[in-house]
Length: 99
Image 1 (cartoon, rainbow, N blue to C red):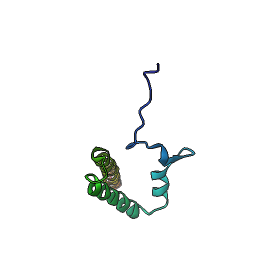
Image 2 (image 1 turned 90 degrees about the horizontal axis):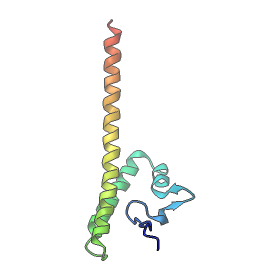
Image 3 (image 1 turned 180 degrees about the vertical axis):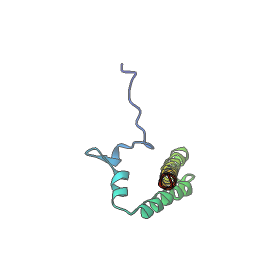
């Protein structure tokens, strides 16, 4: 008996959201502007928070809300880091120009 059966992860990697190696979330992101995609993520957080107590799988829906919130946080965090990097590069260039 195989005791190493791979668990199906319906939150982080649902099989039905991957086709030919392309994740649905990546295709959705590619089809939208950055602002639209952030709105999409936010809407999904609200959707899963709204319904978690009604569909019989509250923990799964809360984890899905968390997945979308984590993705939104990561994008905002990376955008903030990139902005700070650009500012610092500009500052360094300005310092070097005076030498």
